[in-house]
Image (cartoon, rainbow, N blue to C red; front, top):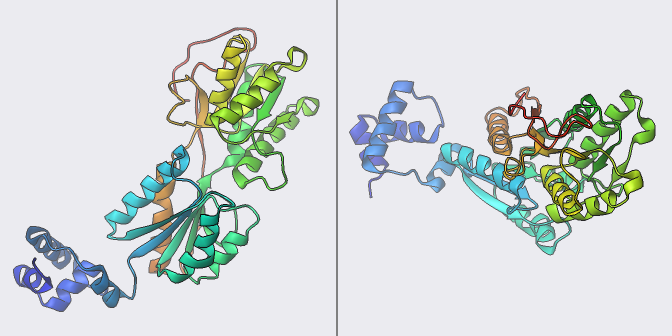
Length: 343
């Protein structure tokens, strides 16, 4: 296997220059850096992480903490993080543990303290804030995906705006009996659920529909959305004409429940979600689109900018969702109306 000496010889530079060019530590002209990179590529040379750590003082490793890896949003965010880190020659150490689980407690109590990272990306931290406190105590830069806290840079969807715009879409179609389905019925609601519910309530209040505000709790899954919707829609006297679901998975569960109860969507019930989940198009679901993979990429960009300059003035990123209109929503009493996707 070729070493740094062979790379330097082929590029016509010293070993120290070749090392700086490949590690990014110290100044090397763009032309020389390109020549060294070409030489390394032609020889199949891959810089040693340990050697780079000695040269730069960095571990070339980023820790990632998230509650789930099998759910759509988190899997997409992880793909974005991994791709962005690989492009920069960084390794990733993943700590996956559902809220309240023994594996999650061990990650915070033991593994994260032992492991050496250049920085951490935390996806979906628990709402009370204790987890963020513990990550910040490690003394490394921390970037969050989802959440709000001035102590850490954050990348996320403007969830308040998403909840408001989803509700306004149904109101514009003439619906007045609009119910919000989702968001746990406890004071410990995560930021995403709480913000989307607040956006719904704000839109209803601004439309003078305070008396129509109604929240039906549901966990963020298709089965839970289905169960909540069956209970809600079974009562003919209080059945809504429009439902804002906290996320697309709850929205899809709602559509399935409506179909089994013989309620036509959108002729008798309009349903809108938030996310643009991979199943959204299959169920022709109107939704507010976010792109989780881009959030993962942007989280890495923020983290690297902080590592390059600890004093840099960096701002958190709040992304605006895009309304995608499909055929799960229609004007009140008019049934399905074909519309182009997007808006």
